Image (cartoon, rainbow, N blue to C red; front, side, top):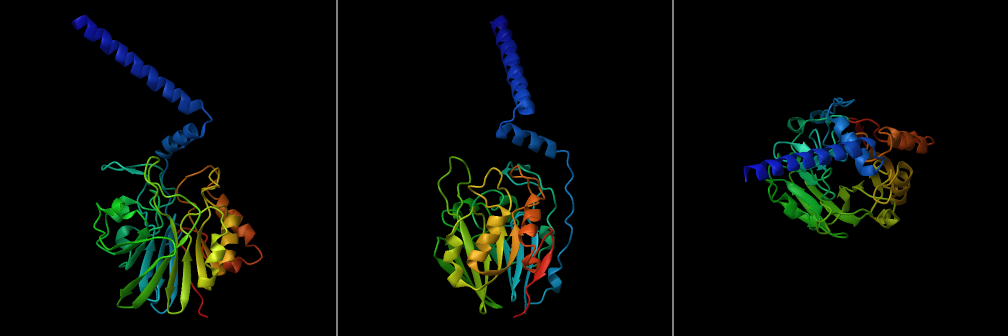
Length: 321
């Protein structure tokens, strides 16, 4: 019996070693996307996260203006005439699977422009869909109960957080936030993406949003591939600005638009300015990290004044009209 146990143990160890060795060789040599992705994740472990180029100062923002700062990835801090909105907040070092002791997934290249403790009091959380880089539970767990707008069939993901005032919106539906500064209308519209949090998850919603207050309208594109759907929201404008994703398109162009497509959709919606989001922060695809903003700058070289932000931490104040 002892001999059999020893033989089993030796066989198990040898088999495990062979499996690990084989997996290591495959990861180090294969050109398959999964292997390249694994190599990038492992290389990221040693890389330092760079500080944001600029630091917003929201305590100095006027409640009589529309002021916005790009904090990184799809996180935008907005003061809309005194109502503070935060989109898809992701302020941790990584995004991905929450293991309790940390998060396993892509590591930031650039730190968020504001830490959680540097945020001003937030009135509205705006969540586009359930993907982990947009619905980041470690960040969301830090908020007390807030007026939270999310896509259909996503509220259950937030059950473990302190967020209880959750308003799930289907395409074409809307809700209204009412606070001391006044009212904010929020309407959801269809984009071209997908909403499962896990590969074997149920189908969940994925939204773009229209924000309206005091006769002004803003558009948050969430995450989207190229689509004609932005033409259909043009009548809800005119939009002062469109916050549009411009990265993670190679090879995922069926789920994420490229910079030229993002601009075309902002134009379809009739937006005066464009704030690029979903770039420079996490490596989620294969294009060079700075390629999206370089391509968008080139696409706007005849009207560069329309580009609201270029760097993480940059603040944009909408001109009075």
